[in-house]
Image 1 (cartoon, helix red, strand yellow):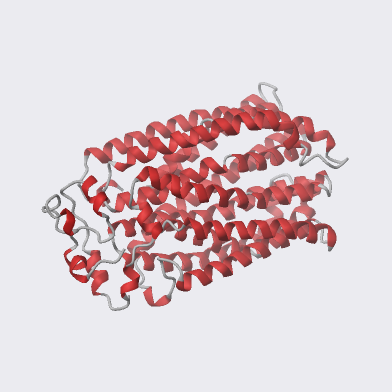
Image 2 (tube, one colour):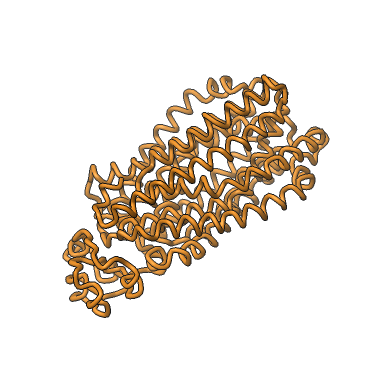
Length: 519
């Protein structure tokens, strides 16, 4: 939204002068209706004036895009508007892993298990990449809420530089230690197949890391349409290339890795083109000014968020070892196949929560703390409705879903156990919205450590412990592992809900104070 220079310098919306006369500085991106809904005593940093006086930006840089207007508007409408495209994009993107598994299943049980052993390591890489994306979303959306576009642009450049550094670390470390890691996870006879797939995927880690970070930047400005386009294009391309590389051109399991890397590369180049001229945030070195404060804020969310995926990888590795000890490699194939389905099934729920990060961050930056409870309750409501539909559908269609992984003679025997796994997991879905929404709220306000602690408690203290006790001491085998996942998630999600509500209560109690006091 364009404003004349007089409005920008004063930081006051003329239509609401009477209601906001006690305000010294009000962000230039706040609309008339939103000002009426906020406190009449709001003190916001003078970053708007700094932006106005910065000659590096032309007048178009201050135009409020549709996405920015959305995250600064009605939180309920924002959740619905951002969640819809995100559900579509993430649903299609989640097909990356599933499609690899489906096509690889035709190569036999060992090939399917090999992909399963790579999954925990891939989760670490994609996890820290998504951590950078979460840091980007949280920090940039808060700067947008404050009305400080120069800081938002600067933060985006910091994200890109961190992306390059992280990619170098991944390529060097996995190039040296991938085989020992796979052997430690119990890959056994499948280790060479796992290396054939994993070496190619991790060689293209620059595209994995960049796309995740870039999606975070786009979400921060509420630009879900472009996020949807890029994610969807990459996934669809992967679906097309997989059978060609695996079977038509005879690359086998390595072909699945090649298809994944190429599809992510295409998405990366398209996003880079958009950042040059077609987004609210601009990626250019001319906006870069190294800031320890910005770096600290990004890493305060990014490192814990990435570490959450490390915990998930440790969880997957731990469960794999328990499964191998009680039922052999077939149990890993069953679990990894069913888990891919579960990861797709919870995408709509997680998409709602991911949208919450940008909305909470913008509200935090604008000091609209009263929005937090509205955002949390509405997000959980929408997520719960989706989870009920998902649970019922999965339970009913489990045998048919299992056939995706058991269509070959070599894997036909796994149909029954995969069906059982999917039906047990129907209970898992119902409590996901509570935990995921709580984590997103903490990330949005920059409290990444709280989100990390919730994940650590749920996955390591609860899920692994219950899975071990039920599977081995109580003799339930692989079924005990499955029920341990469900029970641990239920208890962990309830803890997260209580933790987040206590924080929101604290925020409201000291409303009007400095944001730094709440971090």
